[in-house]
Image (cartoon, rainbow, N blue to C red):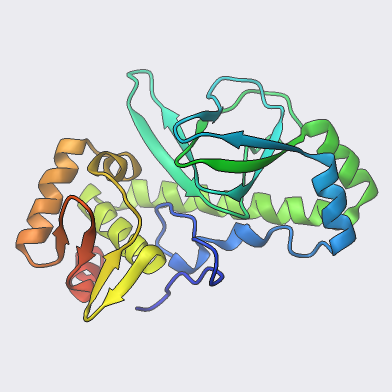
Length: 244
């Protein structure tokens, strides 16, 4: 499996549409250059927040006020169009932050975020972020690195949406899930993450009905096996062939 995403052993990778799997979790270490004292100062400046599964973290159209660092669980960012149809931008995991790009506050959120499971977050207001940057140059570099990773993520998403067919996007998403959440079982890869057809459709930009129909076609071709409890990649190389 070339160009495989390789998160730290105890960390689950972020998921979003991208041609380059190795970049998926790039932003998870954006605070890694801080020493223990600086990291403690960042934590002291923030407020611990817990959100239950399905609860909103922030909402499209609300005013920017700061960022949320993910300390436990998965947070989805998504955009809702005028018709109410949603497209999932990314599933962010531990080590990433959500709430940008206007980290100092001001302006309005261009998308929303919600908890995909019970999550624990550290909320930093824009004012606190500015104070930390003024007194801790290394934190400023961390924020820049984090924003660079976010920029690469959304650039990758736009490239996929603009240059790949929806069938290719679905195949690529399954490859991403296999590489980031797959458990080897003989010659197969069992995707450990529970994800519905509706979730898949929201990520690739299709309807749930289309996603279900296309997954059924993939299954008939021997690429995957779908059951109520899990999805299994039966032929990784053939699935790659759909994309390449």
